[in-house]
Length: 313
Figure 1 (tube, helix red, strand yellow):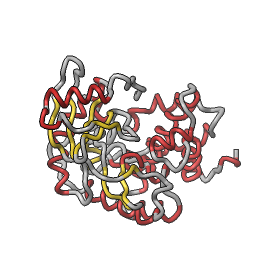
Figure 2 (tube, rainbow, N blue to C red):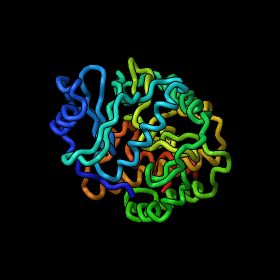
Figure 3 (cartoon, rainbow, N blue to C red):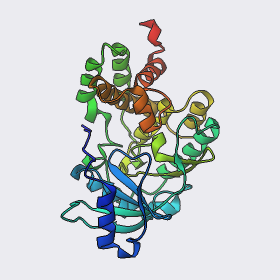
Figure 4 (tube, one colour):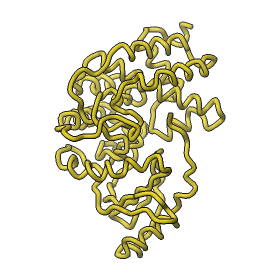
C-alpha cells in the first residue's frame, strides 16, 4: 500500500550540503525547490542546467539504481527527452539515501488549462508510449515492490480495492465500482512484457507552449503489462482526445479494461485521503495534473464499463 511520507527532512539546505560535499564544482550554483514535486522524490533545480532528485523515504531508494541503470540506455531510443543522468550522489550520515543529479529539462507540468490542443497532446503521448512499449525488454526489471507492482497483475491490489470501495460507499456508486473492478480482473497480459513508465500523469509530462515536450519521473519503471500506463484516458482526456489516445496504441479491449481498473484504484486511494481529511478532490487533481476529481474519475470509468451514469442510481 502506498502511504504518505514526511518530506520535511528533504530540504534545500540538505541538498546544498550534499552538493558541496560530493560535487564541489557545483557548490556555487543556487538550489531552488521546484513548484510541483513528485510523490516519491523531492526535486530541486541546480543552477540553470541541472536538477537534484532526492528520495523522500527509504522505501523509494530501490528506484534510484534502476533509473541510473536504464534511463541512459533507453533515452536515445525514445522520441521525447527523458531525464539524463549527470552524476550519482552517495548516502551520507545526514541523508542516508542515494540521490541523483540530472540535466534540467525545460517545460511545465501538463495541466488541463495549459493543453489547448488536447488531440495533438494525446497523439504525442500515444506516439511516445508506442515507441516505449516497442523497446527491447531484455534484462528489464519485472514488476515488484520497487515500482509498487506497476506492470504486474491488478490482483495485487484486489483486497485493498474492495476495502476502498466499501469505505467510499456513501460517496460513490459502489456496485458500479465493483463492476469496473471485476471487469478489470477478468483478464491478464498474455503477450511478452513491455516497458512501462508506471506513473503516466499530467504532473510527469512536461509541455512547452501547450505541446508535449518531455516525460519525467521514471521511478515506476519496469516491464510487464502496459495497462497501468493508460490512466490518462480517464484522468485527463475527453472526447476526441480520448479517442486519439486510444487509437494511437495497439492494445486490445481487455487491456483497456485493466487500465480502467488502475484508474479506479488510484481514484479510490485519493477518495480515501479525502475521507481522512487530507485535502479534497480539487487538490488531488492539481497535484497530479488531472482534469477530473477522483469522484468524477470513478463516475467516468463506471459509465464506460456499465453505461450507468451517477444519476441512474
